[in-house]
Image (tube, rainbow over all chains, first blue to last red; front, side, top):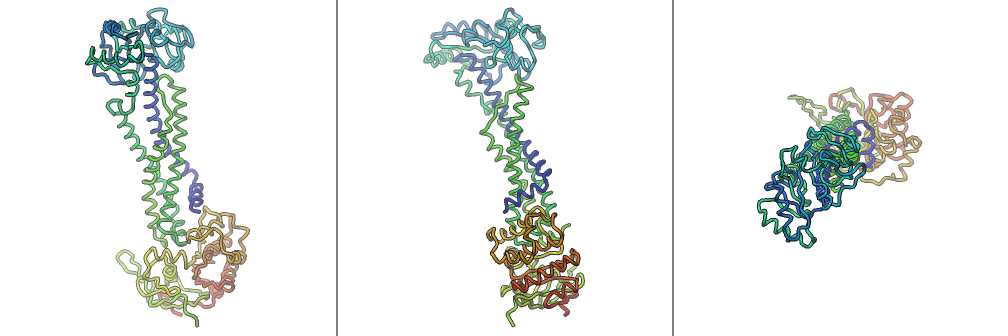
Length: 367
Length: 224
């Protein structure tokens, strides 16, 4: 009977109920999108790193797992590494930012093909000249590029799109290493070196050898590197803190929305609260009804928020397939639900308590 | 003569309005035997409604005693008065006061739910519903019912838990003469056939004539 009363109350003011659900859904969607984007982009980075086919990566000293700046490693180091025991192949790569989230990789295509098995071309093919550019399918879709077309908005250089490749290897854009080195003033330098061992069993030995050889460098096995690509590791935990702040904002928004909504509902239903009290309803019964209404709004907001996170993902995929990758994070649904419920219960508490404390005679006289 | 169901002695109620004490009841004495249909009449401000509110446990008294079925309710806490409203009294109001979001049936059912009783009323309630003549209108919400029907649903809700006392505050005040007569007939039938004790506030002498006895109030006192 209580459930029926709660549902009928919510149905009685459908616009207020729907608006509350929508406003509660907004922070839920924000939280899920933020976590999804963080995780999606990190997963994408890990997938692309694994796509290179290397066992070990050598990165410059004092480099974070997520960012590379410039090309501080001398190219001649590649030959030194190549000569070490059990090293099947060592290749260098230069990475340069095009926008804040898009990078271009400079590669020796023949060496890269040996290590990774090469690109799988959907259109066009490999570099034919020094000013050729290979883009992945996502970048091509976002920028509406076709093989054979020329582009000039990458590093202010005129490139010919030689091929459009399947995504998942390197950055979204790849150009010949020499060209990128010269264009960025890094001739003879690379950003990182990838190493493949002759046998998987020899990876620890090669790793130890490289760490002895280059003690200041950041050297990881690929498993180790990809496992470091977590929200907690980004910018010294800054992303994790940012997500926590967003969660806090979500709780505050949920709290404020429900506080206003339920406060208004309690005012509108003053007389009904008086009727219930005249029938013998206890303070707890009245409080329970207000809290139950808030919980229904919170659950509705959570479900809608989850739905909207799918819609946001579809929108991002359609508009920015190469720039942003949003993962769907079902493990965060109960967390977002709990956050939303915490907010709405806090928000409903004051209106609920004030409703429960109303004087029945005054409430019955309310017009 | 049987033991009074309601026994009121020296009942006083003072409201504090700003810094001024306003006496609403000044030493009221009243006995109501079980099964009586009592009308309380008097001008506005005479203390009728205050007397009702105290008997019904909606507000505490300032002094004196009120015993219902032998229990002194003047010393009850807020929770105690809530229990009294739940189990011993049923209210009928001038403005019907049905919950607008629920059907007539649910308005009756929620009173049972609050009292901690099952969904299905006892068989004798069917007799009451027959007397009230609303069996065909139970699935409608209050907005779809006439004033007379709403008041009859309110009466059904008030008696569904078999209260010792039915308190009716101007039950015909918002009804036309035809519906007023129907509601008063129903109340008289409930009193006669089911032995329901009824206290009714009214301004209407014709309504008061339906009662066994009429008590007059003025300036917070019973004057006749």
